[in-house]
Amino acid sequence: MKKQDLDWSNLGFNYRPTHKRFVSNWKDGAWDEGCLTENDTVTISESAGVLQYSQSCFEGLKAYTTVDGRIVTFRPDLNAERMYNTCIRLEMPPYPKDKWVEAVEKVVAANEDFVPPYGTGASLYIRPFMFGSAPVIGVKPSKEYQFRIFTTPVGSYFAGPIKPIYITVSDFDRAAPNGTGHVKAGLNYAMSLHPLMEAHRAGFDENMFLDSKTRTKVEETGGANFLFVTKDGTVVTPKSPSILPSITRRSLIYVAEHYLGLKVEEREVFFEEVPDFAECGLCGTAAVISPVGQLNDHGKTIVFGKGLEEPGPTILKLRETLTGIQMGEIEAPEGWIHEIKC
Image (tube, rainbow, N blue to C red):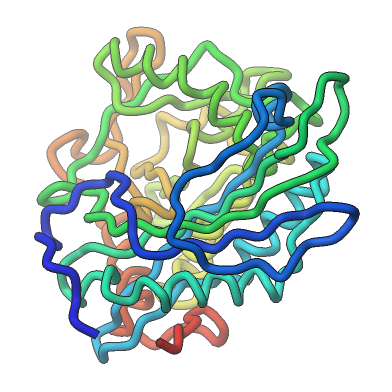
Protein backbone atom coordinates (compact mmCIF):
# COMPACT_ATOMS: atom_id res chain seq x y z
CA MET A 1 0.00 0.00 0.00
CA LYS A 2 1.25 3.47 -0.89
CA LYS A 3 2.25 5.53 2.14
CA GLN A 4 0.59 8.80 3.07
CA ASP A 5 2.26 11.90 1.64
CA LEU A 6 3.68 13.23 4.91
CA ASP A 7 6.96 14.81 5.95
CA TRP A 8 7.83 11.76 8.03
CA SER A 9 11.02 13.20 9.48
CA ASN A 10 9.24 16.29 10.86
CA LEU A 11 5.94 15.02 12.21
CA GLY A 12 6.32 16.15 15.80
CA PHE A 13 4.60 14.39 18.67
CA ASN A 14 1.02 15.47 17.98
CA TYR A 15 -2.38 13.94 17.24
CA ARG A 16 -3.22 13.39 13.58
CA PRO A 17 -6.37 11.34 12.79
CA THR A 18 -6.02 8.20 10.69
CA HIS A 19 -8.57 6.15 8.71
CA LYS A 20 -9.93 3.70 11.26
CA ARG A 21 -10.19 3.07 14.98
CA PHE A 22 -11.52 0.11 16.99
CA VAL A 23 -14.57 0.40 19.26
CA SER A 24 -16.18 -2.14 21.59
CA ASN A 25 -18.89 -1.60 24.22
CA TRP A 26 -19.53 -3.40 27.51
CA LYS A 27 -23.19 -3.65 28.47
CA ASP A 28 -25.32 -6.12 30.45
CA GLY A 29 -22.20 -7.86 31.72
CA ALA A 30 -20.42 -8.58 28.43
CA TRP A 31 -18.29 -7.04 25.70
CA ASP A 32 -19.70 -6.94 22.18
CA GLU A 33 -17.63 -8.13 19.21
CA GLY A 34 -16.30 -4.66 18.50
CA CYS A 35 -15.58 -3.20 15.07
CA LEU A 36 -13.49 -0.77 13.10
CA THR A 37 -15.06 2.62 12.43
CA GLU A 38 -14.15 5.84 10.65
CA ASN A 39 -15.94 7.92 13.30
CA ASP A 40 -13.34 9.68 15.47
CA THR A 41 -15.83 11.27 17.87
CA VAL A 42 -17.28 10.00 21.15
CA THR A 43 -20.81 10.87 22.30
CA ILE A 44 -21.66 10.21 25.96
CA SER A 45 -24.02 11.41 28.67
CA GLU A 46 -23.07 14.53 30.60
CA SER A 47 -23.27 12.29 33.66
CA ALA A 48 -21.02 9.53 32.28
CA GLY A 49 -18.82 7.81 34.84
CA VAL A 50 -15.66 9.05 33.16
CA LEU A 51 -16.80 12.69 33.49
CA GLN A 52 -18.06 12.46 37.06
CA TYR A 53 -15.58 10.13 38.76
CA SER A 54 -12.66 9.84 36.31
CA GLN A 55 -13.19 6.14 35.68
CA SER A 56 -10.76 5.76 32.80
CA CYS A 57 -7.47 4.13 31.85
CA PHE A 58 -5.21 3.94 28.83
CA GLU A 59 -2.13 2.37 27.28
CA GLY A 60 0.49 3.47 24.77
CA LEU A 61 2.56 1.48 22.29
CA LYS A 62 3.96 1.89 18.78
CA ALA A 63 4.07 0.21 15.39
CA TYR A 64 7.28 0.39 13.38
CA THR A 65 8.59 -0.48 9.94
CA THR A 66 11.65 -2.68 10.40
CA VAL A 67 14.81 -2.69 8.31
CA ASP A 68 13.41 -5.60 6.25
CA GLY A 69 10.07 -3.89 5.59
CA ARG A 70 7.85 -5.63 8.15
CA ILE A 71 5.32 -3.74 10.26
CA VAL A 72 5.67 -4.73 13.91
CA THR A 73 4.67 -3.78 17.42
CA PHE A 74 6.79 -4.18 20.53
CA ARG A 75 5.64 -6.56 23.30
CA PRO A 76 1.89 -5.75 23.01
CA ASP A 77 1.04 -8.68 25.29
CA LEU A 78 2.56 -6.75 28.20
CA ASN A 79 0.45 -3.70 27.42
CA ALA A 80 -2.64 -5.92 27.35
CA GLU A 81 -1.69 -7.43 30.70
CA ARG A 82 -1.04 -4.04 32.29
CA MET A 83 -4.38 -2.64 31.11
CA TYR A 84 -6.09 -5.79 32.42
CA ASN A 85 -4.56 -5.17 35.86
CA THR A 86 -5.46 -1.48 35.73
CA CYS A 87 -9.09 -2.34 35.02
CA ILE A 88 -9.23 -4.71 37.99
CA ARG A 89 -7.94 -1.93 40.27
CA LEU A 90 -10.47 0.59 38.93
CA GLU A 91 -13.46 -1.79 39.04
CA MET A 92 -13.73 -1.77 35.26
CA PRO A 93 -14.40 -4.89 33.16
CA PRO A 94 -11.05 -5.96 31.62
CA TYR A 95 -11.02 -6.41 27.87
CA PRO A 96 -9.81 -9.99 27.14
CA LYS A 97 -6.05 -9.94 26.60
CA ASP A 98 -6.06 -12.03 23.42
CA LYS A 99 -8.80 -9.90 21.86
CA TRP A 100 -6.93 -6.79 23.00
CA VAL A 101 -3.89 -7.77 20.92
CA GLU A 102 -6.15 -8.75 17.99
CA ALA A 103 -7.78 -5.31 18.12
CA VAL A 104 -4.34 -3.67 17.97
CA GLU A 105 -3.51 -5.79 14.92
CA LYS A 106 -6.74 -4.75 13.18
CA VAL A 107 -6.24 -1.04 13.80
CA VAL A 108 -2.61 -1.03 12.65
CA ALA A 109 -3.44 -3.06 9.52
CA ALA A 110 -6.34 -0.69 8.70
CA ASN A 111 -3.94 2.27 8.94
CA GLU A 112 -0.97 0.63 7.25
CA ASP A 113 -0.33 3.66 5.04
CA PHE A 114 0.23 5.79 8.15
CA VAL A 115 3.03 3.57 9.48
CA PRO A 116 6.18 5.64 8.78
CA PRO A 117 8.90 4.20 6.53
CA TYR A 118 12.01 2.70 8.06
CA GLY A 119 14.78 5.17 8.82
CA THR A 120 12.61 8.24 9.40
CA GLY A 121 12.74 8.05 13.18
CA ALA A 122 8.93 8.12 13.21
CA SER A 123 6.36 5.53 14.25
CA LEU A 124 2.63 4.91 14.45
CA TYR A 125 1.55 5.62 18.02
CA ILE A 126 -1.24 3.33 19.27
CA ARG A 127 -3.55 4.53 22.05
CA PRO A 128 -5.92 1.93 23.59
CA PHE A 129 -8.22 3.41 26.25
CA MET A 130 -11.36 2.61 28.22
CA PHE A 131 -13.88 4.73 30.09
CA GLY A 132 -17.12 4.51 32.02
CA SER A 133 -19.87 5.58 29.60
CA ALA A 134 -23.15 5.11 31.52
CA PRO A 135 -24.74 7.93 33.56
CA VAL A 136 -23.66 7.92 37.22
CA ILE A 137 -24.60 10.20 40.11
CA GLY A 138 -23.86 8.14 43.21
CA VAL A 139 -20.22 7.25 43.78
CA LYS A 140 -20.04 3.80 42.21
CA PRO A 141 -18.67 2.07 39.11
CA SER A 142 -20.33 2.72 35.78
CA LYS A 143 -22.68 0.04 34.42
CA GLU A 144 -21.42 0.47 30.86
CA TYR A 145 -17.96 0.99 29.30
CA GLN A 146 -16.37 1.72 25.97
CA PHE A 147 -12.99 0.38 24.84
CA ARG A 148 -11.35 2.18 21.94
CA ILE A 149 -8.04 2.16 20.07
CA PHE A 150 -6.88 4.95 17.79
CA THR A 151 -3.57 5.49 16.04
CA THR A 152 -1.61 8.56 15.01
CA PRO A 153 1.74 8.92 13.24
CA VAL A 154 4.33 10.66 15.40
CA GLY A 155 7.87 11.81 14.92
CA SER A 156 10.85 11.10 17.07
CA TYR A 157 10.47 12.35 20.64
CA PHE A 158 13.82 14.06 20.19
CA ALA A 159 14.18 16.89 17.69
CA GLY A 160 17.67 16.54 16.28
CA PRO A 161 20.52 15.05 18.34
CA ILE A 162 19.65 13.60 21.72
CA LYS A 163 20.23 16.22 24.40
CA PRO A 164 20.20 15.77 28.18
CA ILE A 165 17.31 17.40 30.03
CA TYR A 166 17.15 19.44 33.24
CA ILE A 167 14.72 18.21 35.90
CA THR A 168 13.76 19.25 39.43
CA VAL A 169 12.76 17.54 42.68
CA SER A 170 9.04 18.12 43.14
CA ASP A 171 7.42 19.05 46.44
CA PHE A 172 4.18 17.49 45.19
CA ASP A 173 3.30 13.81 45.63
CA ARG A 174 2.64 11.71 42.56
CA ALA A 175 0.95 8.72 44.22
CA ALA A 176 -0.21 7.72 47.69
CA PRO A 177 0.94 4.54 49.46
CA ASN A 178 -1.47 1.73 48.54
CA GLY A 179 -3.00 4.04 45.92
CA THR A 180 -3.09 3.84 42.12
CA GLY A 181 0.51 4.71 41.24
CA HIS A 182 1.13 1.19 39.94
CA VAL A 183 -1.66 1.29 37.32
CA LYS A 184 -2.12 3.41 34.19
CA ALA A 185 -5.18 5.33 35.35
CA GLY A 186 -6.00 8.63 33.70
CA LEU A 187 -6.44 10.27 37.10
CA ASN A 188 -2.74 9.76 37.89
CA TYR A 189 -1.75 11.84 34.90
CA ALA A 190 -4.30 14.56 35.66
CA MET A 191 -2.73 14.92 39.11
CA SER A 192 0.75 15.28 37.57
CA LEU A 193 -0.18 18.14 35.21
CA HIS A 194 0.04 20.98 37.72
CA PRO A 195 3.45 19.87 39.06
CA LEU A 196 4.64 19.48 35.46
CA MET A 197 3.52 22.96 34.44
CA GLU A 198 5.02 24.43 37.61
CA ALA A 199 8.32 22.77 36.66
CA HIS A 200 8.09 24.16 33.12
CA ARG A 201 7.34 27.65 34.40
CA ALA A 202 10.47 27.40 36.56
CA GLY A 203 12.59 26.38 33.56
CA PHE A 204 12.76 22.61 34.06
CA ASP A 205 11.81 19.80 31.66
CA GLU A 206 10.37 17.34 34.17
CA ASN A 207 9.93 16.42 37.84
CA MET A 208 11.48 13.84 40.09
CA PHE A 209 8.81 12.62 42.49
CA LEU A 210 9.84 11.12 45.84
CA ASP A 211 7.81 8.59 47.79
CA SER A 212 4.94 10.33 49.55
CA LYS A 213 5.29 8.40 52.81
CA THR A 214 8.87 9.25 53.77
CA ARG A 215 10.06 11.53 50.93
CA THR A 216 13.43 9.81 51.08
CA LYS A 217 13.19 7.49 48.04
CA VAL A 218 13.09 8.12 44.28
CA GLU A 219 9.85 7.09 42.58
CA GLU A 220 9.32 8.33 38.99
CA THR A 221 8.27 11.35 36.94
CA GLY A 222 4.72 12.11 35.88
CA GLY A 223 5.02 9.72 32.94
CA ALA A 224 8.34 7.84 32.99
CA ASN A 225 10.44 5.54 35.16
CA PHE A 226 13.96 6.41 36.32
CA LEU A 227 17.08 4.48 35.43
CA PHE A 228 20.48 5.27 36.95
CA VAL A 229 24.02 4.14 36.18
CA THR A 230 26.66 3.96 38.91
CA LYS A 231 30.27 4.98 38.43
CA ASP A 232 31.25 1.33 38.11
CA GLY A 233 28.67 0.75 35.34
CA THR A 234 25.88 -0.91 37.31
CA VAL A 235 22.37 -0.13 36.08
CA VAL A 236 20.01 0.72 38.96
CA THR A 237 16.27 1.25 38.76
CA PRO A 238 13.93 2.16 41.64
CA LYS A 239 11.59 -0.50 42.99
CA SER A 240 8.34 0.55 44.67
CA PRO A 241 4.73 -0.69 44.82
CA SER A 242 3.56 2.78 43.73
CA ILE A 243 5.67 2.96 40.53
CA LEU A 244 4.07 2.12 37.18
CA PRO A 245 5.68 -1.07 35.81
CA SER A 246 7.11 0.40 32.61
CA ILE A 247 7.47 -2.05 29.74
CA THR A 248 10.33 0.02 28.34
CA ARG A 249 12.14 -0.06 31.69
CA ARG A 250 11.76 -3.83 31.95
CA SER A 251 13.08 -4.19 28.42
CA LEU A 252 16.05 -1.89 29.04
CA ILE A 253 16.98 -3.84 32.16
CA TYR A 254 17.01 -7.06 30.13
CA VAL A 255 19.09 -5.38 27.42
CA ALA A 256 21.55 -4.07 30.00
CA GLU A 257 22.10 -7.49 31.50
CA HIS A 258 21.82 -9.85 28.53
CA TYR A 259 23.04 -7.71 25.62
CA LEU A 260 25.52 -5.32 27.23
CA GLY A 261 26.71 -7.57 30.05
CA LEU A 262 26.05 -5.01 32.76
CA LYS A 263 25.15 -5.66 36.36
CA VAL A 264 21.54 -4.71 37.13
CA GLU A 265 19.86 -3.82 40.43
CA GLU A 266 16.13 -3.30 40.97
CA ARG A 267 15.82 -1.91 44.47
CA GLU A 268 14.77 1.02 46.60
CA VAL A 269 16.82 4.06 45.61
CA PHE A 270 17.29 6.58 48.39
CA PHE A 271 17.53 10.19 47.30
CA GLU A 272 20.76 10.64 49.25
CA GLU A 273 22.39 8.24 46.73
CA VAL A 274 21.45 10.29 43.68
CA PRO A 275 24.49 12.65 43.64
CA ASP A 276 26.77 9.61 43.44
CA PHE A 277 25.28 8.24 40.21
CA ALA A 278 27.23 8.79 36.98
CA GLU A 279 24.20 8.78 34.66
CA CYS A 280 20.45 9.22 34.88
CA GLY A 281 17.65 8.62 32.38
CA LEU A 282 13.87 8.67 32.09
CA CYS A 283 12.41 5.71 30.23
CA GLY A 284 9.05 5.21 28.54
CA THR A 285 7.33 4.43 25.25
CA ALA A 286 7.61 7.90 23.72
CA ALA A 287 11.36 8.47 23.98
CA VAL A 288 12.69 5.00 24.95
CA ILE A 289 15.12 6.72 27.31
CA SER A 290 15.76 10.45 27.82
CA PRO A 291 19.16 11.31 29.35
CA VAL A 292 19.06 13.61 32.37
CA GLY A 293 21.98 16.03 32.60
CA GLN A 294 21.12 18.01 35.71
CA LEU A 295 18.79 17.76 38.69
CA ASN A 296 17.75 20.75 40.79
CA ASP A 297 17.30 19.95 44.48
CA HIS A 298 15.78 23.13 45.91
CA GLY A 299 18.52 25.33 44.51
CA LYS A 300 21.34 22.80 44.70
CA THR A 301 22.37 21.39 41.31
CA ILE A 302 23.27 17.73 40.90
CA VAL A 303 25.18 17.04 37.67
CA PHE A 304 25.28 13.67 35.92
CA GLY A 305 28.35 13.03 33.75
CA LYS A 306 28.94 16.00 31.45
CA GLY A 307 25.70 17.62 32.47
CA LEU A 308 23.70 19.23 29.70
CA GLU A 309 26.53 18.93 27.18
CA GLU A 310 26.00 15.33 26.10
CA PRO A 311 24.31 12.10 27.20
CA GLY A 312 26.17 9.47 29.17
CA PRO A 313 27.62 6.54 27.19
CA THR A 314 25.63 3.81 28.93
CA ILE A 315 22.29 5.60 28.47
CA LEU A 316 23.09 6.08 24.79
CA LYS A 317 24.12 2.44 24.32
CA LEU A 318 20.96 1.21 26.02
CA ARG A 319 18.81 3.38 23.76
CA GLU A 320 20.67 2.36 20.59
CA THR A 321 20.42 -1.33 21.44
CA LEU A 322 16.71 -1.30 22.28
CA THR A 323 15.77 0.76 19.22
CA GLY A 324 17.93 -1.58 17.14
CA ILE A 325 15.89 -4.51 18.45
CA GLN A 326 12.63 -2.69 17.69
CA MET A 327 13.76 -1.85 14.15
CA GLY A 328 14.90 -5.38 13.37
CA GLU A 329 18.56 -4.40 13.18
CA ILE A 330 19.46 -6.53 16.22
CA GLU A 331 18.03 -9.96 16.93
CA ALA A 332 15.23 -9.71 19.49
CA PRO A 333 14.50 -11.99 22.44
CA GLU A 334 11.72 -14.46 21.68
CA GLY A 335 8.26 -12.89 21.83
CA TRP A 336 9.37 -9.26 21.87
CA ILE A 337 8.53 -8.42 18.24
CA HIS A 338 4.92 -8.91 17.15
CA GLU A 339 4.47 -8.75 13.38
CA ILE A 340 1.31 -7.23 11.93
CA LYS A 341 -0.06 -9.01 8.86
CA CYS A 342 -1.42 -6.36 6.50
